[in-house]
Length: 221
Image (cartoon, rainbow, N blue to C red; front, side, top):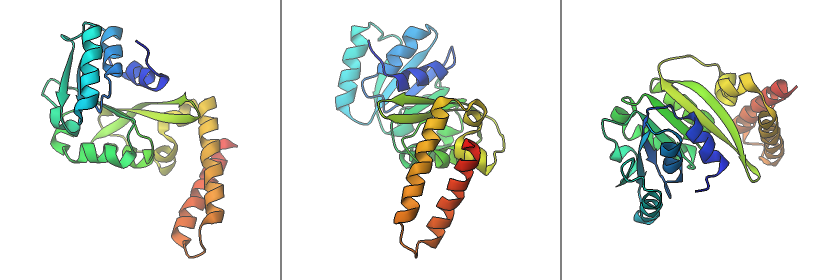
């Protein structure tokens, strides 16, 4: 069964022997990849809609993995059980991802590992989860078509990060690979265009964007 590069990279960040809750599982392709990759991984494929779950059930049955993947209908972390140690949320907006963890803070704080791949507001997601008592263990960038996505792996524990580390990602800053250059070159260009389009009375917004432009230029030098 084919899996895209984004889901594969997420799956490769999951620790052996994990019990995963995949929130918004869609067709359960990630869950199937996980349990076939490592026989000691168990997963709950969770979604808010019956349509994707029906496809998930068919895919799981086709792969004969019913004993390894449980399918559950529910919203966010509502499908959590005490065996779960890893939560995975990808392919959603950053604010939505924050809401999923914020709405069930008592569950969030029970987790050992969180892996997220927000479509936007990545910095906000990092700041929120760090405040919840997690640190950034690893980060990856992956390209799908014309888009480059961030994947962030967090572990229970505490670390302090600078504004620069939150903005770029501490691990991405260390690696600084080709995708990092491509990604932040795009981010720089989009901000340079935006700053010229904003009306003069958007002073605070312009100030913030100018600071980000300066920061990106310094790192890309």
